[in-house]
Length: 496
Ligand SMILES: Cc1cc2nc3c(=O)[nH]c(=O)nc-3n(C[C@H](O)[C@H](O)[C@H](O)COP(=O)(O)OP(=O)(O)OC[C@H]3O[C@@H](n4cnc5c(N)ncnc54)[C@H](O)[C@@H]3O)c2cc1C
Image (cartoon, rainbow, N blue to C red; front, side, top):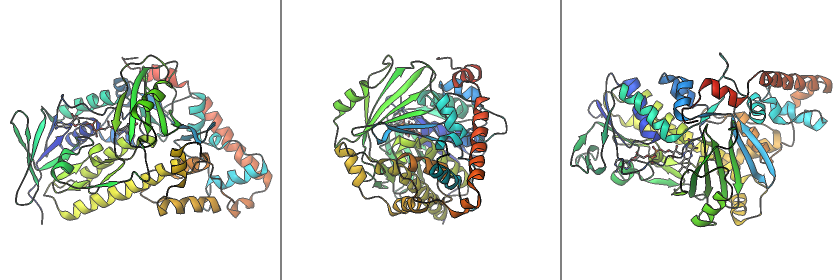
C-alpha cells in the first residue's frame, strides 16, 4: 500500500546537509515538487565538516557547479589525501592518497609486483607509484582535461552552505526562518503531518527531510527510530575545534596526527586553517583536550575553542515513515576519513533515484535502508582499521584500540591481506584497493607473500616494469604547477 503522491518536501535544518538536500532536490526535481527549508538563526550549525573526498565531484556535476566558482566562494584548497602521523607508532608517518596504485594484472594487483621488488631491494616507496601521493608530498597540482578527478577539497562549511543556498533558492526552494517547536504526527498512521514553528506557523508536507543535526528532531525525537551505538569500536566521543590564520602555503592534504587519546586534524583553507582534536572522554577531559589542541596549532587564533560531543553510530532506519534523515541526524562515523559529506550526498542521490512521486511504498523504504546500511558498515570497518592496527601501546587509549574486538568482516580482510596480499573489493565499498593497501601497509601490516604470477617476470623485467611506472608518475607530476600557484590562478578566494 502506498501513501498519497509526494508533492511537497519540507527540509528541517539548514546546515551542510540541509542545503545540500535543498540544492539537490530543487535543482533536479524542482519542476515537479515544491521544496522548502526551515532553519533557525538561534540554533548554530556544527560547521566543522571541512575535508571531503573525491566523490563530491559527482554531486557537483549533477548540480552543474563549476569548480573554480565553487572553490573561490568557499575559500577552498585541493586535497589529494591525508597524512597520518604517529598512527602506526610515534614518529612513523604515511600518506593515504587518492588515485590508483601502479598497474597490476588480471590475477594480481600492483602490490604483488611491488612486494617482490621490495624483497629484491629495487622497489621505491609505495607512494612513488601513485601520482596523487607524490604530488601531495612535493606540493604540485593540476586539473587536467579528460583525466580522472582524483582530488577532493578542503572547504569552509559555512560558506559552502551559503553557496548551496543560492543554488537552491534559484531553483525555487523557499527558505523559512524559524525554530521548530513541535512535530505533529498523523494519529492514524504515525506519519509526520506538519511542523509547528515557535511563531505558531504550521508547515505541512508530504515528505520531511530531517537535517536538524545530532538530535534528529524528527527522526528520533518524534519518530523514536532508535540508534545503533558503535562506541565500543570507535571510542572517541568528543572533539574540540578552533580556527587559525593559515601560515605559509596551504598543503594539498589533510593532516591527521595521532595524540594520546585520539587525533588532531589540520585542514588548510586558502586563508585559514581548521584545527581540531577528536578524543575519547574516558581518557581525556575537555579542558585537557583544549590545552592539547592549543599547544599544537600554528597561526593566530580566529575564534574560541569549541567542544562538540557525539556518539558514533547510525540511526536504525535512515528512512522511517515519511521522514528521511540526512546529515548528523542520520548518524555519525567520526571524521577520520572525511566521509560525512559523502554520506549526505549518497542519501540525497539515493532519494532522488528512488523518489516516491506516486506515494511511499514500504518496498522502497526497505531498499533505501538496506543500501544505506551496507554502505555505512563498509566505511565503519575502514575507520576501525586505523585505530586497531597500530603498534602503539603508550597510552590506555591506544592499548584499548589494539585489543578491542573488531567486526568479523574486517578481521577477515586483514587476515587475507597478511597471508597473501590479496584484496577483494565489495561492490558497495567506498574505499578501493589503493586505499586499503596504503592504510594497511601504512599501519604496519605487510603481506607474508606475493602472488606467484609475478614470478613469470625475471628480476630485470620486474625492475624495468616498476621503474617505468615510477618514471611515468614523476614525469606527470613534474609537469604540474605548484599547488598554491594553481589555486591563485584558478580559484582565488576573495577571503584570501
Ligand atoms: C568534529 C566533527 C568534524 C567533522 N569533520 C568533517 C569533515 O572533515 N568532513 C566531512 O565530510 N564531515 C565532517 N563532519 C560531519 C559533517 O559534515 C558536519 O558536522 C556537518 O557540518 C553537519 O551538518 P548537518 O547539516 O548535519 O548538521 P548541523 O550543522 O548541526 O545543522 C543542523 C541545522 O538544523 C537546524 N536546526 C536544529 N534544530 C532546529 C529547530 N528546532 N528548528 C529549526 N532549525 C533547527 C540548525 O539551525 C542547523 O541549521 C564532522 C563532524 C564533526 C562533529
